Length: 288
Ligand code: NAP
Image (tube, rainbow, N blue to C red; front, side, top):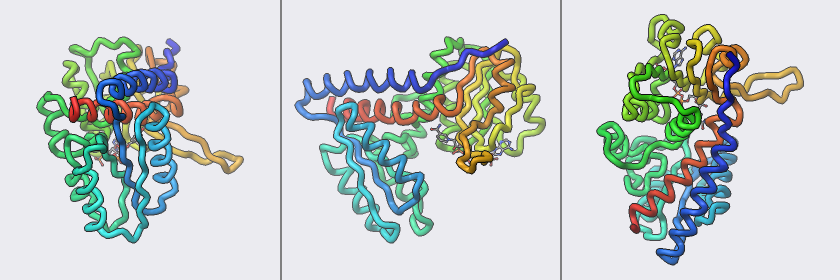
């Protein structure tokens, strides 16, 4: 079997187009556009690229995107002060604090300080609790992107065996909750899981969110499974430029899977698209 490739790049374009239409309707109704504020502390090069892309993407769909760049020397109290003012500002619908934060700032304290109604990353404990109890809230972006990719593959999740490899708060746990909400029978695997290849081989739906290049081999994949590869890992190449690979050995897995996401152009582009959808949703919930 050679798998269908689930094109996250094309699907992300579709989601952005939906958001653009939603923003235009919002402007029509409210006379203003949703505002997304992204906060970056420090000079981490990858974070600078991510935050610039988020600001640009929000402006491209017609929102008001704004990037707050703070020096690495910013104190926790100063950052909390900025968040308090964004929480109080009615023109701000979505707030995202780019991680990682400098070591002298407590991540948890900062994420807890974002108003749950504006928490477009879905990391606030209130939103985590709403997701876990099957109630509406803001859901983390990468897991939402995974679910849209599974929908693209027309997977019937009810009763399906789903295995999620990885139990992080930002990907593994929330994607497992979303699969459970769709009535899949979900196993969450992690670094202490015994005989991981056998666990993976049971999966009708296999989601890998580990951060280990090409760890999931072809013979871990059940014939006809659908594979979602969240991993983004840069590996060295002879020309010194390096290339991106996922947590799944794509060339092997595509010979057994029914459908699979590539890296790049799989889950990655869906994350920003789903962030924009979350910002619109937050605006509609707050002002609707
Ligand atoms: P993370 O916080 O480092 O979590 C990794 C998870 O993998 C942990 O639960 C860990 O288990 C588990 N793990 C590590 N080694 C393992 C092994 N040998 N066998 C089984 N499980 C193992 O990572 P993350 O933030 O979830 O990110 C995972 C990957 O997704 C990374 O490559 C990251 O770059 C990528 N990512 C992509 C996007 C996107 O937009 N596409 C967004 C976020 C993340 P323990 O809990 O036992 O340590």
